[in-house]
Image (spheres, rainbow, N blue to C red):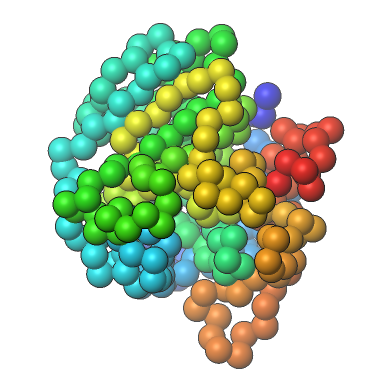
Length: 301
């Protein structure tokens, strides 16, 4: 079992954006964890991460419920009603029920983490998230001993999400993790970016963030979490299992069936910026590789 990371940071500790852009990072993905001395690594990793701008992060999105173009979510997502919001938590848990966002947030500690974000389309960003560890929520509802996986569902509201009127995928959007992946201290439920509430186009009011997996695993606008004893169906795997495996770990050695994953284009790098090599597990290999020991990663992609 991976070691658990804890933090005393709250919203009161979050650096304002204008200061954030000019400071040495207090917590940069794995680098921040390293700074806390809880997971090994190098200090250089912390200094290497510089976040993308607010505009880049909020206007270049994949969120097909609002359209398949990169700018569609920022143009259309204002129609989504995010308050009030509730999340149904069911399956193999001791305390199933429908939890309001206010109830969920009342029992967790919000902190800031800067994570690399790598899309399967071979572009990347660095994002300063605010949120809490998913393990905190799962421990609160009480995971029963038979649970092995966690399933997630996104809201499905045709009146507010125009993209779901088009059968690009089988709606609602579904994702899933193995239980040990869900309980890993790097796995977050994000509620903000740059210290602000998370914008609708980025998954308001609450989304999953799994930094060592391709971005489509980080499901947005979650309305249901189910603990189960079997691998749950996931939307892209259901649409094309040959191209989108259940695990979807960032792996430069396993190409997508139609394009390489060996390198990536950093959003905001400019037209003439050189592509950069993609890191194994998106740079979080030291923290997460042990969960996949003994697995054939070309088969379990």
